[in-house]
Image (cartoon, rainbow, N blue to C red; front, top):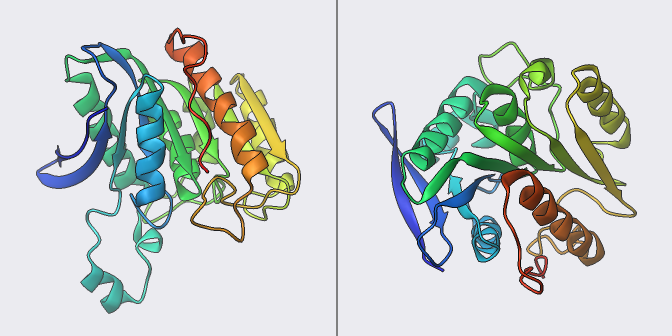
Length: 250
């Protein structure tokens, strides 16, 4: 399972992207992995590698690539707080273009997933890029709020989602909360977007991340990950051999 860093050109700006591909020649289905607030760290790389082990070419673009440490110091704002939705969509589009231009990737079988802020990015990506055939947000908060200089929230763009959505929620998470879940469900239903929602009892935000021991919940992680793979398998057309599933993060 080859894993490596690749540089993608985004309108003349270099964006580092973590890439993991299955063994073999392809063409493979692919999944874009939208990172959480700490960036493309070990957890994000592990998720990308697990997708690759399950038959998907997986790529995790660094959405913070325009935001230097010096900029964080000078503004007093975190990298996440300096993101702009229009630039996020530009980065996601460039990532999809990178995948579609690779002969080992099937451009008609691309999905997207993400965690925390990456769950929000997943919703935004699905709403703005019709290449995605399946979207799986994990505990994506702030979907009702625009970021940066944009005026539209991802929620207000829901009509643009043309693929099925699988959303994982923690029961005691406050962002997204269970009330937020009802709003998201209503909006997807109003726009005839096929969707499945799962809430994990006693689970908090970041329940998938073992590096966050205060919030990691093994039971939720081990239930949600096979559901994610099954969802991608169904909508991205991957046939899986018995016993080939990877365990959840542990």
